[in-house]
Length: 475
Ligand code: ADP
Image 1: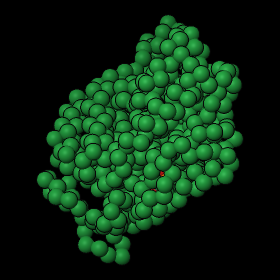
Image 2: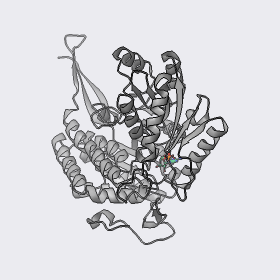
Image 3: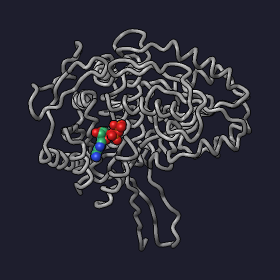
Image 4: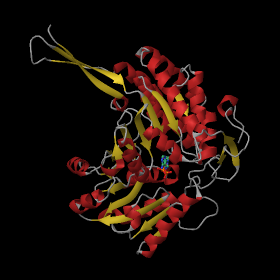
């Protein structure tokens, strides 16, 4: 591990042992540290602790909760450089992207510190003169989360912050590849004055064991998951036994559409930002590109020129745009999709050279067709398949031809077309002439098999609250 200024952020490291978890840097393979894991019994008692802590937290005023959350926000920002360094070393993304994620992650803490003060109920006009009806919102109880490795901080804060602001306690199992950011975040929450037991991190070599306990334990009233659709489906089924509320942020297969009236230079810029951020390992990354026949050649030429200057390497080195893929398994899956696309008739127009270790060259595929696996599946890597289209109806049908419905992007300067297509796209989010759309102030989430629930925005806190109806009679 490179030098970290604030030593408290790495204070949870332990000596290697049979039960410790080894964390390595995907860019170099170097082992950067070991952390303790928790047994099933320890996880059960952590959930009980969470339950006890929640009882008094629920009685704390919104303003008091807000003050603690704002201190946490400030500490995260004060430690931005150290947190970014930890993140790049365990996850691989370029340091500037890590610093950006720390700020993005912190923004959810600030936002929900404010939103927590506005969890209003309603006064309902009564159907009878002697009655008065109203609703109040209350915290759901203990909220658990399972988060992925691609955004080690932001995927936690956008669940933890609304949960805590709502008056819930929060227990998270981060991905085993990236638990260091999670522990550092929890340490800062402690330093901000968050009472003990309200934010706990648990890990075990078996993610399934932790997930099983989260789903089964009746003290947990809410499970929020970000990860693959396969695991999300499984968790939803498991949560049925105890009838838990769930939020699911699952896989995506984002279409990136460029119409003939689009500003092609802007579209290329947006396409590169959307596709290659985090080496293509985000659920909102453009997964397939539909380019109108009239601008196809111009787009391809400019896109390839932009892709060729992207610098691959260790995220800690200056000027690097594309870091490593998270692990060998993920790299194999991406390479396999490229190989199958080529077998099915696609041509490699840029990239495609095999690289050592966990790196994959940014790759552009042309002559791609709708039925290819690379169009139907989530790539989660720096590969852009390009499809030519001619008619809007055909385009909309192709864009919606997927089980997923998370993000989508369209570039056009025709306001009628923008409205028509944006309304027809079966996706939870539409970027219009914009390739990067995530922000704490807007609701993030999908439709179809991309999930249920929304994170961020004014909606995000409701995921952690229940509406209680009070009926006053005989007035
Ligand atoms: P990814 O492909 O991004 O790793 P996963 O859905 O496999 O997506 O992982 C997302 C999170 O879910 C990680 O924290 C991982 O450890 C966890 N996870 C994976 N399998 C299970 C499972 N069976 N039960 C609970 N959590 C799981």
